[in-house]
Length: 394
Image: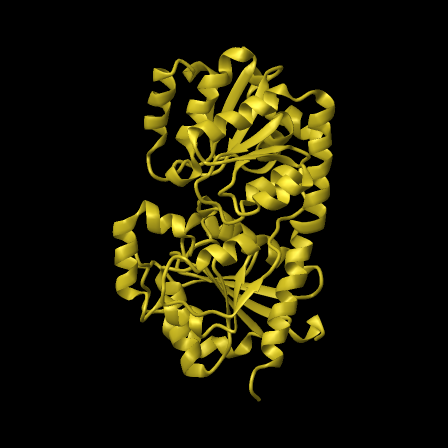
């Protein structure tokens, strides 16, 4: 099926706030990539129309908020979708568990139009084990909401085989037309020397130090506490080691983590720059010697892919769903999401010589180019939407 038959796409997601992480970033990047080949990507969100981050979002946005409550209900979604859905060649629901998915399902079922769902790891059984009360709450509306959204989708997209298999373990009432499709991000800027210099200009005290970079949300599922405790176990082996904990603190956990660092005697060896963007973010990748993420649950991890694209070896847990690809490529080190596992990856890293680290860096860049680039993601998404459109009645 020619990709030219599916030129106009709509992505539906709760928000394009950059603090939301992966789903928003994936939509943004695939939309920009598709523009190069004449495709148009529009975004429907439940953000307030005056949200400041909308001004910087590079794709056309239909903001139907403000949404109400934790579920993100908006009375404007259904009528807007009924009036406008027919003009799109393909519709993608990004994420679950908020009204954007159920409301879109209601409209498209009434119109008889197909759609696909990108789950973005939101069916991972980690949430079931970690938040049993929240899981019970989800069960209350699973049968009449998300179950139907997945059941009636023309395709339910998973970014790797690991995610697809895990998704089946969360709810026994589960039915989906599963498709494993590449997920990726744009190739990082390659002027590493300039970007590194920009980062050190902002953080001159870090020049000449050995930086381990955590760059993600400061959140329980990311294993931040494990990273701090493991770092405390190895910090004495080299006084030049510094842990950079970069990312937005959405739950107010950072103060507790900083207290943990003080109790372990490593507070002066950990830097908290907040959320890094633009040149400072890329500069942090190029200034570091390894990327660390001992996450308890990570569907894909755009920051992991970005690190690989920068030639930065990754030290991750086996709960980052692309860990098999990384381990097989020799692009990083993998261990369980425990204190012992996180410590082990740091200890192993510190025993490697320069040649071994450089080999990992090269392998990471090759892996990124072959599997995790936004170009591959865009090609696969258009092909999927093209097949869905071709099967549409009439």
